[in-house]
Length: 153
Image (cartoon, rainbow, N blue to C red; front, side):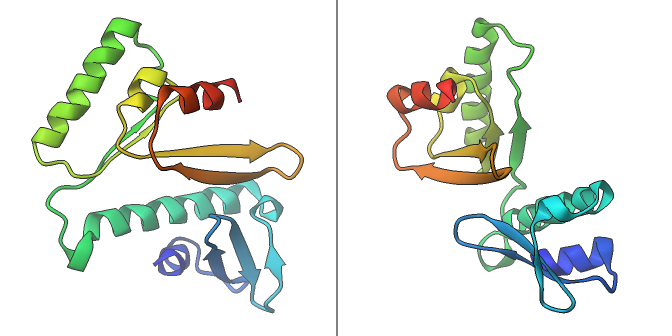
């Protein structure tokens, strides 16, 4: 699905495919089979690469199991940026209410301990500044001790 989306938004003669491995590392392959790191792409190519990845993820989530998801996912990217602590608690309540409305997939990107602490599942993403590559780690049971460690990074 990722390659279908990449072909749709970028379709050219330079790149053959994109590969996402089990460690969530992305590689772009040239038509001659040579791999390229995403950082080797131009700014515009990277933007299309990211758009392709996002659209492929959305398609997977929207299709759900056997092609039928009851509602589209709710995606919140850093929703607490301009909120005081009292409003963060209300945002947690809102997320719970959305679950009650049948939203089965809620993805939240956040550094806020209270909001992240309300998660059913936690995936942390860390960037290695020496290689400019990111790694994702899934936590079995998010708790405040783990969140404190992540917040310090």
